[in-house]
Length: 128
Image 1 (cartoon, rainbow, N blue to C red):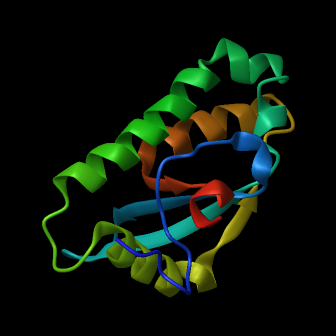
Image 2: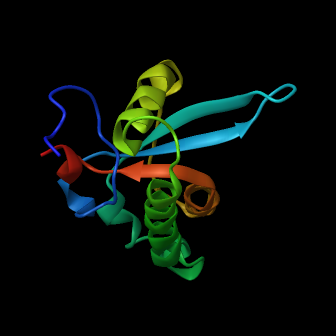
Image 3: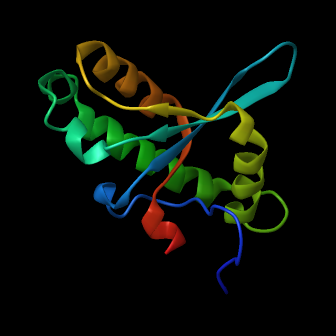
């Protein structure tokens, strides 16, 4: 399959140190509506140096986010490709994008929670 020429393609993280990592989240809105937003995870390689992140199982949470992404890809049953479908979701969620970085105990706890709830995670290596 030829690579897409535009947009952000989602896939498993290959190198946490290449730059910003995006985490796409989905939560329940009113009624049957799903609310999607995304976080740009900054300096992920530095998170492992935060003791609280380590104590809470940060490496496992990062691996969980990647495996969830892989599972979503494997189970995708929509039209077209998974990457294009998620890229379209990402484009629509750009207005709600926030930056997130682990810098202390509180943000370490929040990171674990977010990583475990992530729908898809992506890193710069996927986009070349």
